[in-house]
Image (cartoon, rainbow, N blue to C red; front, side):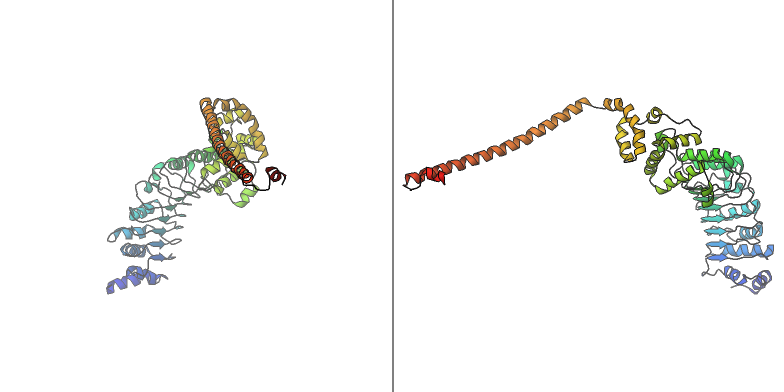
Length: 434
């Protein structure tokens, strides 16, 4: 039960607040409420601190939405001062568009969440110019982190080192700089990285950042969505993404290209207005999407669409800044014994059949060299033995049939002779005549 002094303090701090009733439920540890959402812009620092202590002392809260409030460090000072002093039970915390949350406040927020259950943290549209607090904080359950539009201009690798378990990361609207993109590249190269959604719209990426990211995704099999619109990426940067998705330097390179990435986040209008390299990138992303979860099928589709279509292969090579491989170079790493499989993939695609004809001719000697003569002779002998066995069975059957007929003829002959001896009127000749 709250004391009279507590009630007086509450009325003094929150009496004029439209959300006073909900705040009182927090204060009274009401088990019926596990979610708190409010739009508050008129609290004093003392009121924010007291609200922080109420939230920290609540046993039932799991989700908090205080976006677009006048929220600042006072709330988190109140959390720290409360008994227990943490928000470790909170699973979702949304405090976006609060300019009062700066880098210092972000430190306090992460301290309160340290080691806890938070899965989603949205601090987009705040003033966190330096996110280095992430380097010292451990958030083992965090899956989605949104730091969009914070004015971040430096993203050191240390800030991302502990976030390999993230599934979604939002950095839209921050001018990250080359160091920031290299930090992200290091993260994406990490085999433990679980990120499947990365938002980097309007981050001043340009060609340099695009090339850095494309190179980092060569062995990444997790990231499916990378949003990069609004970054003034030219043909050089888009060419790097095209090479990532379908490297035409060899068939093996095409088969081992990135078959996971499915979107670069461009709008339908941007794609409709695009020409050249962006169109090729979009079409190749579509192959990945159509073969989601089946990289082998995606690789085969890319081989058919590019490597076995000379004009497309030449265009891709030009856009990727590489020399278009000759037939000899293209198929030098393909075992001749695999040519039937390639032909089976081609099916009735006439253009691909025409492309493969000189390859088959070039590989003819290799195919002959693959023949195992001893195995071939043994196989021929086995076929002959099988035929002899079959013929022997048929011969036995025919001999049996001949013996049965011979027996029937003997019986018939005996019957005829017996009829003559018994004085029957009909002679053998008459029987024959009949």
